[in-house]
Image (tube, rainbow, N blue to C red; front, side, top):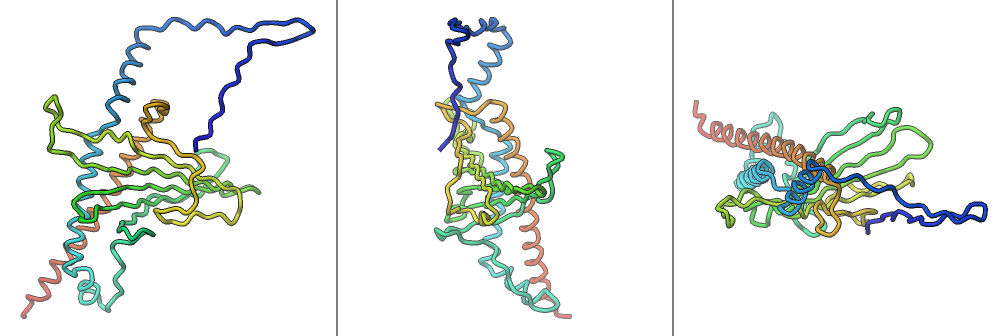
Amino acid sequence: MIHRLNALSLSLVLFSGITVSLFAERPASVTMKDRETQKHIDAQRSSGFSDNEVDTLHGLVGEHLRKMKKLQDLGVDKSAAQYLAHTPTEVKPLYKKDDAGKFYLEIKLPQGQSYIDWPKVYLYDGTAFVYPKEDFSDLDKIILAFRRVNADGTIHVKEMRRLINPSPRAQSPDKDEKGEAKIDTNSDIILEYFQALTSDTIWPNKPVQKDPANITMVLNDDKDPLPYEKQKHIMLTYKKMLRKISKHTAHKLRDMELDQKQLITKILDYN
C-alpha cells in the first residue's frame, strides 16, 4: 500500500483575536515551452516507455537462455565437469527453482561500498533473477533486487529495492496500425521498497519474498503516475542492468559452447 502525505490546506489563521485569510500567490502564466514540454510528457506516458534497445536486450537474453538450456539438455555441463577438468568437479545447477517450482537464472549484480551520501557509507549488493517461459521460448519475468545497509552508526537501516518486469517482451514481428513494429510499453514495471531497523531482519536472496513490501508503485500508472524525471531514470537504470545481464548470459553461453567443442575434440583425438 502506498503511503502518501496529503498537504494540509490552510485557509484561516487566528492571531491576536484577528482573523486573517491567506491566499496562495497567483501562479505565473504558462509559457509556450511549458505547454510543449507537458504535451511531450503526456504523449510519452500515453504511449508508454517503449525502447527499442530494451526490447532487443530482452530478445538477446531470451536467446542466450534458450541455447544454454539446449546445451544443458545435451549434458555438456556435466560432461565438461567430468572429463575436461584435471580432476572431476561437481556440477553447479545452471537454473534454480523458486518456491513455486519455476526455473530462474540468478545473476550477481554490482556490490561494494557506496559513498553517495557522504559522510554516510553504505554496503550494498544486487541480484538479478531472470525467468524464462516454461518452454524457454521467451522471457517470462525479470526481477532486480538491491539490498543496502549503512556501514556505520548505532542504528542500522536496512533497505531493499526491487524492480519487477512481469512481461519482458522482445521485438515483435507484428505491426501496429501505422505499419510500425510493435514494442513493449514497459508501463507495468513494478517498484517495491522494503525497510527495517531491527538487527535480525535479513531479506533472503530469493526472487519470492515472504514479507510484503512496505511501498509498492507502478512505473506508469494511469491514475497516479510517478514524476516524469523519475520514470525516465528508472528506465535508464533498467536498461543499464539489462546490458549487464545480456553480457553475463553471453559469456556463460560462450563458455558452454567452448566446452562442447573441447569435448568433441577430445572424442576425436585418435593420436
